Length: 305
Image 1 (cartoon, helix red, strand yellow):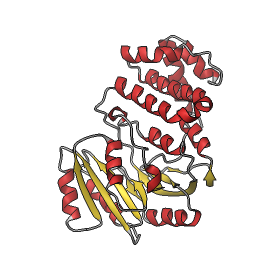
Image 2 (image 1 turned 90 degrees about the horizontal axis):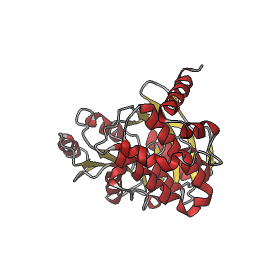
Image 3 (image 1 turned 30 degrees about the vertical axis):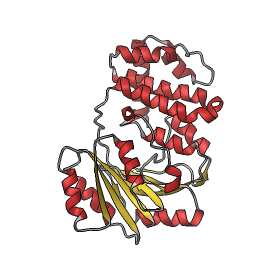
Image 4 (image 1 turned 120 degrees about the horizontal axis):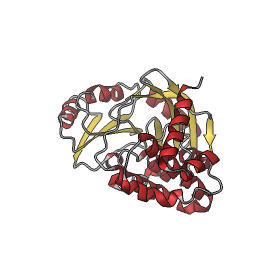
């Protein structure tokens, strides 16, 4: 088997049939689709079973709910392909996606080939690089939250390199893509950028069933653990990564005493060298002023020509 397409599924009854068909309709000669029913309480599992009864390329697995990362890991463990790609149950593979990714992978012998994607409103997003790229540069972009490339979906991975990349706490569900990719990039893989869309992304608000006060510390702890082999290099960027999450918290206008306590040590580092001056000012200011700065600046970014 050449490629396994792994799809974690939870509460997508209204669209799962069409999403599976976008995978099964690929013009590739040797692939399977691994649908992981992550304890979905609706008819997702039943719909998948019905389709699998008519198409042997679809293999359906039912498991207790454990979150997206656990479902992806389970799917990889039960896959037969030499290569793996992931599709979210909201999204679709573009026609010819598997063939394009596989052709490049075969030609350049990379560990992961990253394609571009098209958003549901027609915007095309491709990375600003072409060909092989330095994994450290991609980690830096992820920590600066400037990533303009696919992080988990829209990528063809060598299956072997995924080992250990999905071992993260249940609380990271909804924010697990960046920790997963950083886990992989820390292995110093051969990464190739394909400047062609292979994936159709639909923006769907992520419904988290875990409190933000549990998600944020768990995600940060997972990223920090992954960075430890190069901590001296990435410590300041990790602080910036935390700062960007703090700014997101400010922009939302939430009042959360637990998050305030969590971010207090970070705010004490407002004088840290390497963190941009604008971010240091936000950390230094009282929350109400910091919130005004973040909202004004992000409004300007969204509306500038």
